[in-house]
Image (cartoon, rainbow, N blue to C red; front, side, top):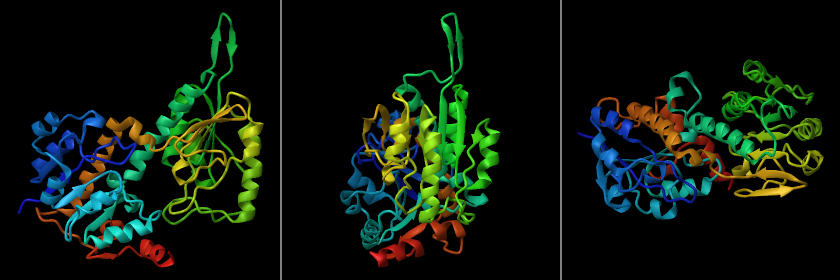
Length: 380
């Protein structure tokens, strides 16, 4: 039996990515999949329908027909209410779902009977590295954040020695040294800036310094700052206060701050206070990658670029989508790896004995089956 996978056109605002690109479609067709692509699904990411056809896909005129025909639907953004209406019992959905941030939405998804796997919940284990879409998209976001900051800054990033005099390099502070933060550090260094990185996890100091940046050591009075999955833990009130106070001086000395600190399922920690912004030099820039979770800066306006106290604060949402072509290529490879796990011998199998499947699975047979998400549903 041939497994059919469907790629609908993304309909949410600001979403330009597509779940599969032609190169990956060709590989999946070679593996025996039937690939259906809604007309125009890749257009916003600059992938034409002709490229999908040449790779072996079949173009479907509209989303409703695609959902009706596909065994497995592949998406980037969580389904809208209209898209939920197209899903059916027994169908498999693979997508970003925001399961920890939208438990009510997961209840609505469960009600469709769909077997849904969340790309956010793919465990951080060696065997799942090729499926880690959070990391692939964070790479794009960290790179784009620094380019956005450089474009918004009235100052050069590199040291310049000219006949008209010497220009000092920009000082860039990156808050959070996860994948996005490390990519931001590397990109700022390539542009010639003097870079400092900060993270509550002391273990990342070596990674920051390996990229040629200085690690900002702060005395937070806390030792247990990292989860078993490698994410930063939420600090207690006293440690968080100390963090804000000590960061203010470093922020004031910076020309650019790129903030990337996120805690899964929680509001983003406020690291940059209004007082810290006011202490920055006029013309400084903050790019807040945590804007979708409320922001690391107390003055961030999600979805907008604003100026406060002479400082530009960017709360642009969905930065990976602004580089849709390469972001889609990376995401498509993540999805391809997960599909090969789900379809090992030509048949679609949801093997909950497999750690990757078990941890990624959110809904099945009308129930929210993921324990972390189910707990949030119960709390709500």
